[in-house]
Image (cartoon, rainbow, N blue to C red; front, side, top):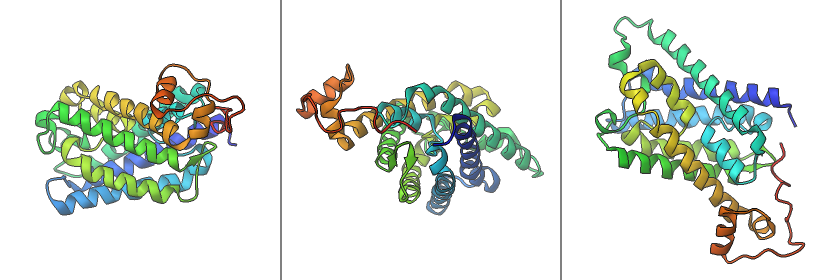
Length: 270
């Protein structure tokens, strides 16, 4: 297992690459989700960026690259809670670095202005690519992130991605962007949403709360679903309280002494 500083560096580098690769397509080409061809190009680029970063760094840090994913994996008992905040800080810092590099490159174009480019910022209402309101934005970001966290948990073992993980995640993120780009410009990741909002200030900063609240809430749900659906043995033997007791009651499971997989921490180290 890699040391924590090494894993944090991997998360920062991966978040940098993800931000640069995903938002760079929008910022540097001027593509928008308004046409089917450009929507497909942006979504495919996002999927390829996810594949590259997870394939490169998945065996080092798990390649979460997203605070919502890290939170969801912690809820699913796939990641230690004590490392949650350091991972999130590393992810945000890496994404900010990618944003700054994009700005430096974009400023080399004679007609570039920050105000008119919107810099791939996420928004709702009049700032949604297709004019979707706040409720639609919350629902889309929440549901899509929950599904992405569930998929991530399905290919994560002992803090690392399975060999097939990068392929599965790339396909999932491509599909998620196809769905979400017309609604909110596809945040799905609080770290990705933060960089452009800090640059643009004004409306983007005032709407940033949604792109932390909805993905993190979706991450919580995705983590709970992963715990309930993918770890039945550990759920039956778990001594967790609160929401996990509710999940056990809903699933009709009960704690059994000596149940297989009763050690709830057996898969979260790493």
